[in-house]
Length: 92
Image 1 (cartoon, one colour):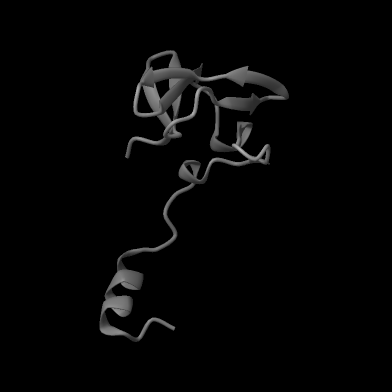
Image 2 (image 1 turned 45 degrees about the horizontal axis):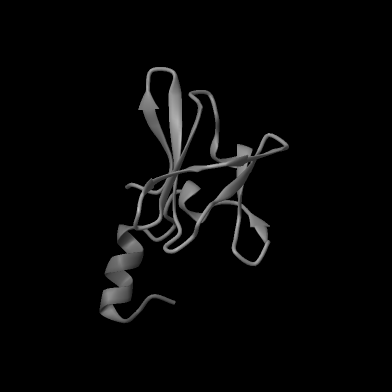
């Protein structure tokens, strides 16, 4: 509910990333490399984006240099039926 891309105000969305102990976090947004602002000492970073952005318009640089889509930008794929079947031990 907190991480990933979310509405922020009438003109922006916010991208929130949690990287404990990271001094900085960089993103690739529409072909440009930008730095997210550290908003909490625990390692919470934010970047303000235009309100018309979609989840696939940014990627996150990881500590090892890998550039990848933000996993928190996608909807969950494990639904209520999956939870029920898994709890019964019959989710195949």
